[in-house]
Amino acid sequence: MRYQTTRHQTGRSASSYSIRRLRQPRRLSPWDATDEDLQFMAALTERLGAPPVSNMMRYCGPEARHLDQLGESLGDWRRMLEALALRYPDLPRSGQQASDGTTLDSAPERIVWETLVQMVPDELELCCHPWLEDGRYLRSDFGLCAPDEETPLLCIEVMGMLGSDRICRADVEEASLDRLAAKQDWFSQPGRPLLRVIWLDMMAHPDWLEAICSEAIQAAVAQLAYGREGRRTSGRRLSERGAEQGRQLPLRGRTREYRVRKN
Picture: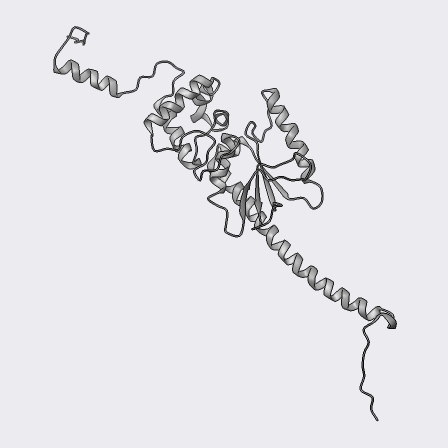
């Protein structure tokens, strides 16, 4: 015989059943996050140091297919983030403020910052939104600089709307590509800092993100060493050139030499 608990049923069994129902979050519709969704988000958030953004889900593989669907709606994605915070209260919360207190312009910038700030060596400084040219509104997202230097050795652009496949789904994404192209043209000129671009699909895979951040830091360190060596070499060359020019100067322009006359 099958027993059912109704609203008229009282007693210990009915109350314990109600408590169990309250403790288990209900999934109201297909547009609510599943347990698997929340587990996936928790693992990725812990690796990145910040919750991923919705448009990263398209690059996370089949495990994130349902999350990619939820990301199509701002309300569905917000409910998922609320469920994530309830299930895992110790995880970093969404927002533009990094764990070190730095406020970024966007959540994707925060994701990259959280990775970079843990990897930058003492011989470099990580700066936020450095200006690239005086008298012109042109700046980069991040810069890796020598201590006490304003001009970055290497700049990092965060493409928070697109993956490296550059597939656009909206006009605003095409506009972001146009801005990147203009910056790449500026960086391609002689004497400009190096440039690295970080795309959404790189952020979606923490190992990939860490690898490109590590490569960028190594390139900046190499530029720093090259600059120091270049200054030392330049100093030696200038000294050698000055001595050579001194030997080639006409007699009236050279330093007077005094000789001891022998009797």
